[in-house]
Length: 238
Image 1 (tube, rainbow, N blue to C red):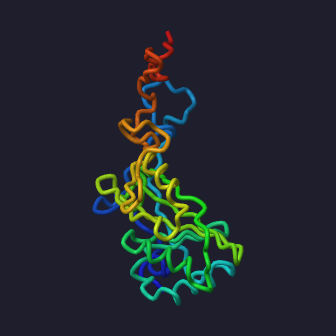
Image 2: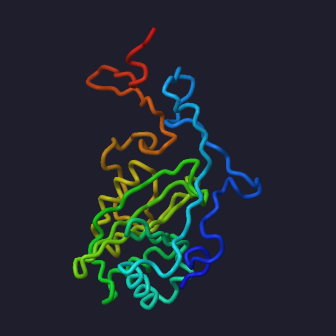
Image 3: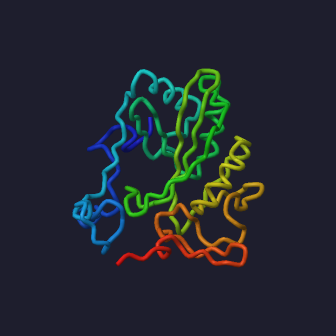
């Protein structure tokens, strides 16, 4: 059983980075991230504190407790690899340190008690300003056991200053194009990937469009000799 929040000890939960030292979370205002737009909906007046993400205490529910127990038996170093475990609506997400990612994935694939043979998706998320660990970029691995008809998520988080994650392609070849798309959209660098190039945007594109700090209005695009202005400049209101 891992130590710390994943074990269900203490008050339970990962404290947001904004809470450390200040004693109070840094509030977020509004709903959609805009400002100075003459909002009359009332959403602009919202003030929201940063969330505290709790770990689920053991034992988990009847479906997920045997899975996690099997992973503990198959991978004795699990306590050092796992940061927290969240079971919500019957679905389990295991947050692991990036240094242990490949070993955890390999164990989930090869253990006879687990047999997560299929990596169905690798997706990215940007929790800019709200990630409780201070690491905004998340790489999420969606695993399926065809043998036992079970699903599981494994998640790794990194900072935008050091967005490196080991490529899962040596364990699951299906990660190839998924990791390319996540790199393209979020800028997570998958080290060891056989060909980490853009898959949706042009090769010379600057930035990663699904990051939360990417310009909402877009950027000008050249198309057949004409320049299409960004959406927020195409129409002017009196």
